[in-house]
Image (tube, rainbow, N blue to C red; front, side, top):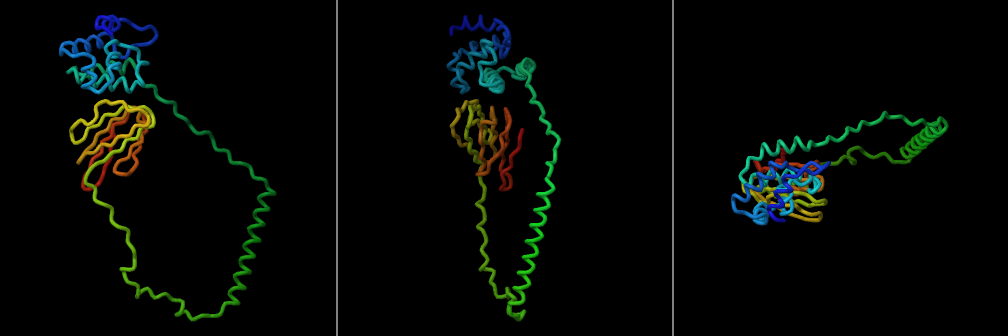
Length: 261
């Protein structure tokens, strides 16, 4: 789409559907890109954000152009940082224009104890008494028929057992790195930083995708649509419930520690 057309769209208001940014922010993004002599394709290759989403940000397109509001927010932040624009004010304006709707709290209803039928309860009680009486009679008959045996013969001498006969499970292998496996069940947005270096910048993973990230000491993962991601850290599953989740996974004293930021 020509840049002059983008400018007209960025200045226009979409009735009944607020833009993802604002006409002012859209113009600021486009001006910053053009000042650096970059095309939308250049910016998309550098940020790893699809070109159509960058075009939507510069055109102040409706929020419905993005998979979810969380994607729009992260794309806006990443694009602003790439262009050298302070993202705080832009993100604050985005959050005011598109507040997150809280989910209603579901309260459990009162528990109603089911009524028991008197006859059925009495039959169960009589059946239990009958079984107990039969067990006592059989136990006494068995004691009468069983020959007496010396106590010493039934005693088990454990002093002869050697410690070597007791099997012990092998010790777990030492942990010397952080390894995260991401399995995508629903379209999600992923950003990964390992040991201070960006491993993945705002990439969109489709359902069925599988990715492995490794670091020596620390991994930071930001997941958009986190509920559509299954995460495994060093062989252990980690919960990723929520819309957008940022996790810090560190290796300290031979142990893996996971913290939500």
